[in-house]
Length: 409
Image (cartoon, rainbow, N blue to C red):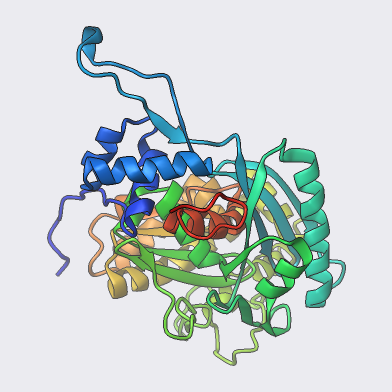
């Protein structure tokens, strides 16, 4: 028996008081201090105090004052996020390429640079040096006088944010790489590190679907498959920062869509999730069908252009992802499950297939149309992931010890 229908009420931002104030300005700006007080439940004096510190730090800016209807009432001086003084930088390390980006304090991507690795399984020192050099060029060309506050790094598999370490990335062959320390030395910036699934879950909370603020699951499907779980405004890491490792969930011997094009997986699990739905597997399927493709992006472009064989490859993937989505919905019962997968983002028929699979298999999700949504950042997932690590740190602790910002008392 499925659960009863429960009306959805959008969540509110949680966390520190300064973070709640800055988040309300992000959501509603230009907005008066009195309105921020009502939205956050904080006293007007507390809100005014935080806003004064934000102004001193260049995080917010005042706009021309307004009055009530027909000029009645006391004037209000609205505040909004200042995008003219500061930026954050992002870096994302994927299996075949890396991306660097610049993001303003409202989460807009200012510039990005994606390049393939020089060779398979590159050395960490080589990747870090390349990222630092490209970031310096991006800042010189696009910062326009704005100061970069910090750099966020995101990648797949097992990442320890507290230590700034990529614990294990088997596709790259990396173990215990102190990426945060390495990038700080190479760039001179404070560096925050996290998994790309947790980074994108934070981006949804901060900039995307408001339903993700109360509770959410994010399922990332690319060359790497992983997930993130969030509740009460926080993204769960686990005591070893290993939460979200869903890549090797078994699909079972009754898998109706099995074929010989699946990518072999070192985990030893017959027909694990990653072997069945990862980008290399889809590329193999395209080759087996004789499609004129060289890399995964070519398969996606054919599907977006309506090629029937390419579309069916993505529809098959959507059905498999839908099975796992139903399982995660039943395990966590979130307000929303965000699917970061290009078929669900670009092809309506794939999202429909995924939701249909959820409807058929989930015991608790009675409204897949509402509960299962594509990423808010389709087309810019990788540059957003890196930038969101740094931006999320800023909004969590805007009055903390950010080196380039004035100290606050």
